[in-house]
Image 1 (cartoon, rainbow, N blue to C red):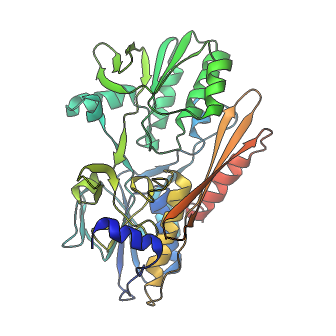
Image 2 (cartoon, rainbow, N blue to C red):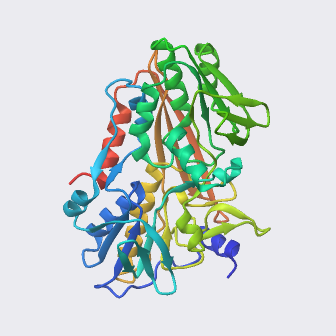
Image 3 (cartoon, one colour):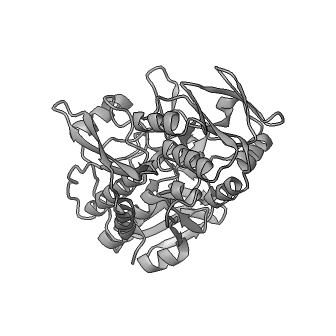
Length: 419
């Protein structure tokens, strides 16, 4: 069955979402310990105690992007959430393997890691993203490594946030360049919130510097007005500007508008699904045969179009509907995807049909510091009469916030981090 036809049937609810499992003894391997992978592991352990669940991640510690932008500039009492994977696995009752994944052999149903081969009956992939420096004419691995080490925008891995915080603290003036990836990109970390908070930090700390923002997208109006009015002395904003090349030796970024020199930089190139999905042949191609850069999975069941034994969740997920494109690449959506896949696998133990569940997304962003104001972004989904998904997005101003963002984050963490 052709990919596009299958996607439509899945969206219309015309294909079975589960196949009966063999009950006890099934092995589920989950690659990626972000919000999606941890959610899948936690829910599977509770819903299907007879299944062997193994979570694999190269990092020893989970670090969350949520609320991290304010922590970067010491706004309020903000902090970032960290949890030790091994301790968390012991508490939740699943197995944790700290290792990078070299490849997936879908024919043999094995995940090949530096620590050995992990056989699976069902595979849940939540590997996140990769950054495409080749789009900036940076192809040499050593040059890419140097850019990441010296000027990373810390959107690839939340474990990089402490290094970014130190770099910002050491910035004493000059041109601080920030690039926004072309949509779609993962959020958090919300780039416009980050830009606004950095501008506020430059102003309140009286740092003689300028934040130069290169943005290929249309900015959210609420942030644009604040950045260009309230922080006009601190911000130069180049909208609809595309980075063409980076010259590390000259500390210069070439765009289709002008060449921009910098003293410090937060460089975030275009994003794509993580390398592992490319190796495993799970990337979606458009009708012309061109790679979309993102995974090819069902809109409702998140099952890979290429392999019914594989589920793809989180930021790596590709097209959900031609009506709106992708699900938001947020932790909230990844968490819901993980829970839905866990329920789907657990339901298969009894051979029962799995009811259609749709994710939703909630995101709190700081839109103003003085006076303090948040924006709550909500996305919900429903099926249209012809089966395609529709998206509804609401923006709610919170002019007198009272910790709603922290309460939301804690509620989410209780789902997959807390005992």
